[in-house]
Length: 305
Image (cartoon, rainbow, N blue to C red; front, top):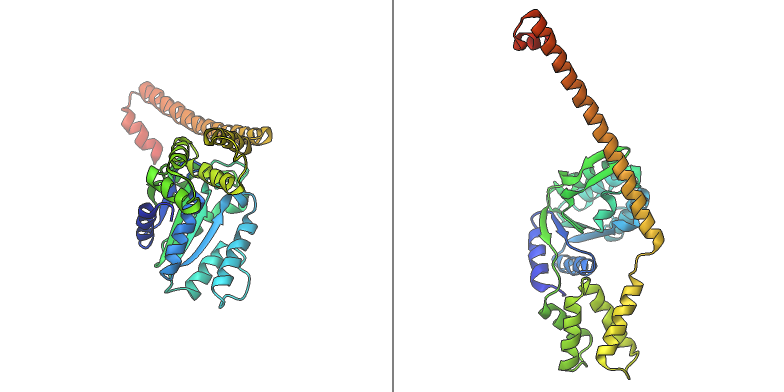
């Protein structure tokens, strides 16, 4: 287990309520979900998991993936499930007394995304329906607390804070957590090498991903003739190269951002128009009251009747 204390705390919390774990990319979110799933499955929980980054533009594909997981773990469900409503209903019918965890990684893919599959319009309602049932918990993994984002679907703008989730911050790995993982996967390293590697990983902004990268390089045995300091430098370079954002990805993010800005400006423009009309209406009533010599309150009362 990568983060024993943190993971145990999350498991105890998830047995009672739903959780949003948030943290910067590269901190071991996928490993955390796997560790949680293992512990909860040992306690008899049924665990369903999805990487939402794969399904943001394919709602039906997301449902199909969930349907396959449900049917694999609940043989009584014999027919494919067609939508989230059927998934929730099947769990209610065939796992009424069984604890069920639904883990959604990269949930950010659904948030602040103008190109989201429009069929996700009722997704949050289904998640709330699931979360509000007994023996049901939702684990949502995001980069920032999910309530700080919005959902764009069917030209609607929806605040995502409708999901009542207890927030936990996923912080960088500690020295001790890094050391334990290295010693488990590469026990042959001497103390000097271990110290250099541990420090380099701890300082890296994507500590867990860089840890995995270094362990792979060690297992491959490349550049053994070089000093460990030089090998670390090469590993940092190869990691940065592998994780460098391409021009296409940058342009896609910019396009999405511009679309959202346009949508928000349009929404703001509508609100300003309504506000302007309201102000103009009040001003007209004020002038009318002034001309007729009546109190403004009487004029407003008469207008509202």
